[in-house]
Image (cartoon, rainbow, N blue to C red; front, side):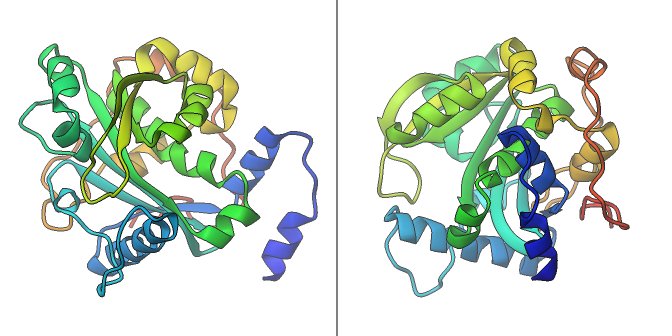
Length: 269
């Protein structure tokens, strides 16, 4: 608690600086054990239940079949060692792969995949209710994982599956645009809309607006280099894509390393 109190004393000049400062206290951990995934599932359940998006369940967890497919990455975001938020990613390069977005919005995603586009489907973005209010930068710290994945894999399009009232945030932060109005979505009681983030077109603008989303190759490899994080399927080893990596990163200063003695990414084991 002393560390957190000390962290709150400074008053950075801008929101971007506050997010950058928060990143110094953040650790991204891939869910590679059942215990790590269970903590995320419980956070998911609590967040969706509080929002009224799901019905109560005796299990106290929100899990679905997409947690076990071979193209999934589950991440927990920890602030000073406490689980603050979580994000799940699915990397899509074929219509034969699975993700929530391709199940619900396959009529929009399939043509893009057949045209050779690489798609990232970030989903199940949840945050601890109290920590989200303590740290206004938490959404930006969490969504940074998706941006790192877009760079690492040379993603063309990223899906944004949100309720209609949340679209404004993603239009402003990611220059996203609506592709499909709200429709039913797996396990949720409220309809979800589909937006696209055109990463090839808008990456430069995104990094200009959010400089704290810059990253080093070492950080991205630590997070994604071991392949998908399905508990039961860890088959492929993925090399960084060079499609847009050089253009985007060469002129961007790497984000400063957090002031900790150990490596900042818990995926390095």
